[in-house]
Amino acid sequence: MGRLRATDYRGFYELLQEQIAGYSGEFDDILLLVPDFFRLLTNLLEDARVPKNARLLISAAIAYFVAPYDVQPEEVYGPLGYLDDLFLCTFVLRELRSSIPDEVIKGAWEAEFDLDQIADSVYEKSRESLGDKTDAILHYVGLR
Image (cartoon, rainbow, N blue to C red; front, side, top):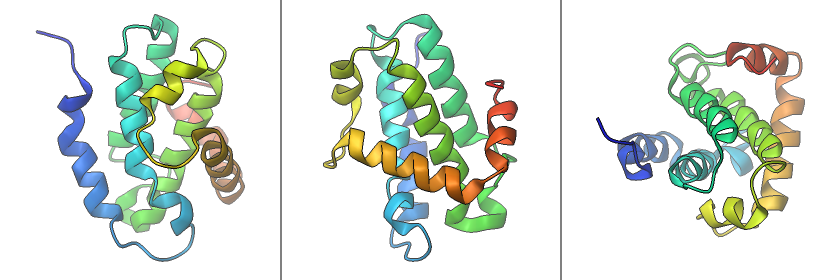
């Protein structure tokens, strides 16, 4: 069995795009970025410069995206169910900055927005919205 590549996640990425496309409502400014953050994770996982300990964090965040019964499930909350996924992704991204060079992280980002600025905004807005649920999210994936 060979290694998974970012292109192997294409189907899920496209599913995310379909589920988020045209969403207009609370937190739409960050929820529309869900596919972009998922793509960032898969691109980083494919990059040989990413160390093993960082791959474990990235894998936890990807697994959370695909977990059907996470802390705030999409089946119950609709697109707002992706706020917890975004929180975890940006939490992991903050952790990765200590072990991955900035140019590797920025090279994995394909969206047109400035990653640093948007990641900070997404982290703060999702953390504030989720409140006490953030501990449950980190516990769910074994990061607390």
